[in-house]
Image (cartoon, rainbow, N blue to C red; front, side, top):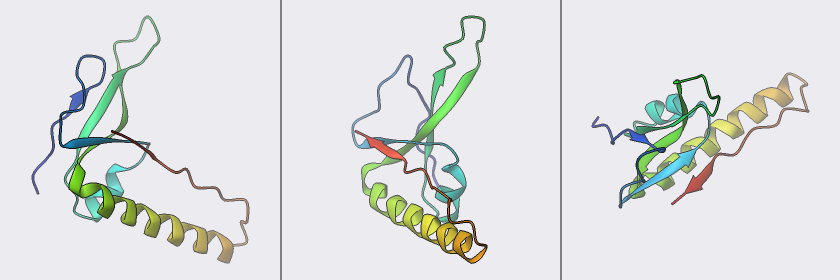
Length: 99
């Protein structure tokens, strides 16, 4: 599986033909669906910190729909599992797509 470029959003823009899928904990879903990705990072706004925070994944435009489908399957699976356990207050976060 080839990787997409990693992007530092403080210094670079998302390249043409790629899209930024913002959200946390998306890497495992992309790996399970065998979708190549790159990381989008941004510097933590704290003045004393030089640490970068991962804000999302860089996906090819043609991989957006398969990734959406993989996320929907994951959300459905978690929702069904939470209802079976009696946890009806489970709320899944929907990632946002920025082009």
